[in-house]
Amino acid sequence: MAEAKTVTAAMLIIGNEILSGRTKDANLAYIAERLNALGIRLAEARVVPDVPGEIVDAVNALRARYTYVFTSGGIGPTHDDITAECIARAFGVKLAVHPEALRRLEERYAEIGVELNEARLRMAKTPEGAALIDNPVSAAPGFQIGNVFVMAGVPKIMQAMFESLRDRLVGGAPLLSRTIVCDLPEGHIASGLGAVQNRHPEVDIGSYPSYATSGFRVALVLRHTRQDALDAAARDVIALIRDLGGSPQEQAV
Image 1 (cartoon, rainbow, N blue to C red):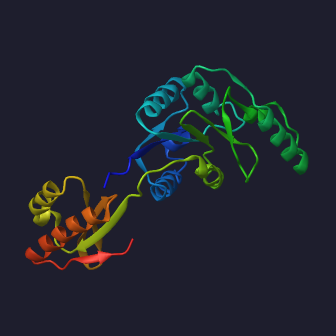
Image 2: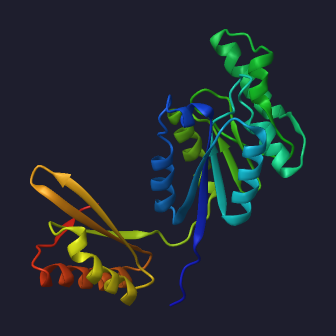
Image 3: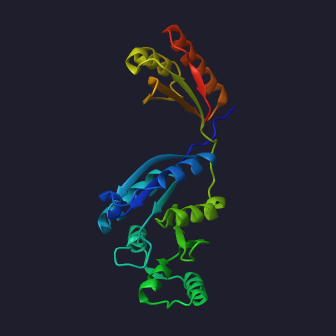
């Protein structure tokens, strides 16, 4: 059976407020989980400041490397919302008022009785040739140009935008996982676990220690797109733990 095509993505988080720690990002985990369900592997995430050159360089690097790029942040009405103009620069096109985006904003602000001033009109500008991404929360749309999807930073709005664009994404095989927990220390299982990884190079095996009231424990997480490959590696991990005197337990995911 032929392997399903690997479809990859990157997340670009834009904003000084993220880098300063003032705002805690809540979008990355959401995107990663939703993409995995679609058979799209989130392979990289970057956080960049509100600096045009940094944004342009990151967009161009990521869009050349991955199937899809998702950005969050910087598409509001204030002076530091520069994502749209930076995306236009990255693609070498002009930034212009999108007629449909303008219509949506006019309709929205008329409904709530608020002036559509010059600042708010900034949210109607997109790179020429861009397709809008619906925003059912506050109307101001995101947009797609090429393989880059530009969304708001506010989690509720970003999530609504992502759900509205899901049908545009073509994924591969979903990434499956199994988690095996044991109470053996990492140093005790490291050598044997490395040997298991060498026998199953196609399976991603990660070791994640933690501390609970009962003491240290290690979660061994195995990931692959094929169930048979995943099961074979899991059998070897379970056998390793038992051979070393541990009690492996499967953890539901």
